[in-house]
Image 1 (cartoon, helix red, strand yellow):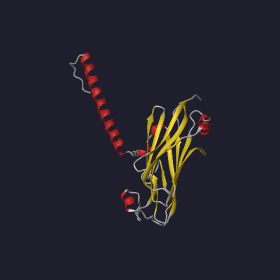
Image 2 (image 1 turned 180 degrees about the vertical axis):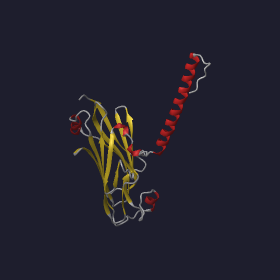
Image 3 (image 1 turned 90 degrees about the vertical axis):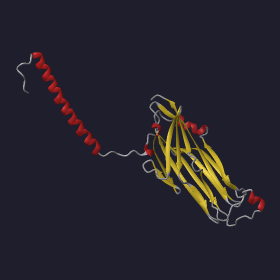
Image 4 (image 1 turned 135 degrees about the vertical axis):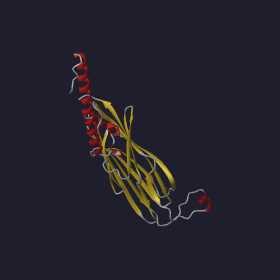
Length: 256
């Protein structure tokens, strides 16, 4: 640095300070440019929508069976999300397609077993788990459809619900809302749980059906009232499209 011999000591101090600050600013600018270049070229892992925090409770899930196959890593046909409520969390899941479809003279079964790994917040334990699902069925006289839904905690059965449509009944896009909640005996399983304990909650769907080989003959009045099924129309039982099934998880405070 070249210093003028006419500068006073005070002026000299100011000039040295200004030049030092200028050089430090240059170094900082160079560092920021290099950092920005590194950030733009480094690999950034993609964010998976179904892999979100699930309200900090649902850590992972799996679906497997003759009618479904998916997981939190590979969501496939399933759409899973959660929302916080005052006392816990509600997990919503919606398969894009899970149904039993039967042509004339056939019988069949569709199964889907779901497993959810749940971790309660700190200083909390799971108090209650219950589920809700809406089903839709279409069948003629002579056909039979039946659904069975199981709610499990680990390997223990907490609740079971069935919907049976016998041969004598006709159904055209009939809806059935099913609530699956533990009874008093099953609630003891939650009371025995430890504070902060991780649980695996299961929800199993089984759809069974038998399609008659004969299409029933109906009168014109019955046809006009929409209570007949065409020979080409499938007999179906499914989770109602665009209506997510839900699992509600409630917590209570605890101490370790």
